[in-house]
Length: 150
Image 1 (cartoon, helix red, strand yellow):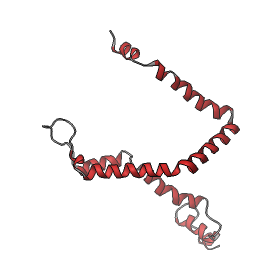
Image 2: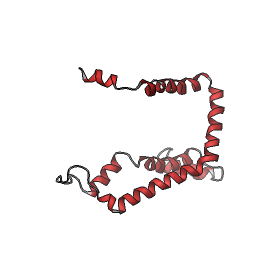
Image 3: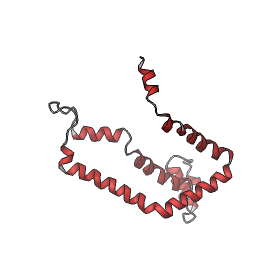
Image 4: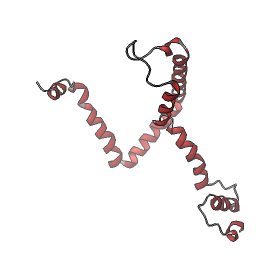
């Protein structure tokens, strides 16, 4: 018997059949009923933030504490693989790989996006002259001295 056929026979249709229907509905509903979907999703978002926002923060804090516990306690010394195998990479190499694969890319994007958002839509408290000077110094404006000082 072919392994592909075995894989298809092993699928539980009671579980996997509703999934495409739910996904299709989640895509089509906002497209067809944009106004209704907007109101429904905004009220759902408000209910989650107001009613369970504390739970999200508590859960995230719990995950961080659990990760710290696993790293500090003897649980962090459990090796993966055979007991006779040697480590291929050191701790610093693993840290470098983790950071380079994009695990902390959200922080990197926010670090750049937050100042740029203030640049694109400055508050009304900043004088126009300073905004124009910032644009000229950052290379997004002309470097003509007359325009910088006006």
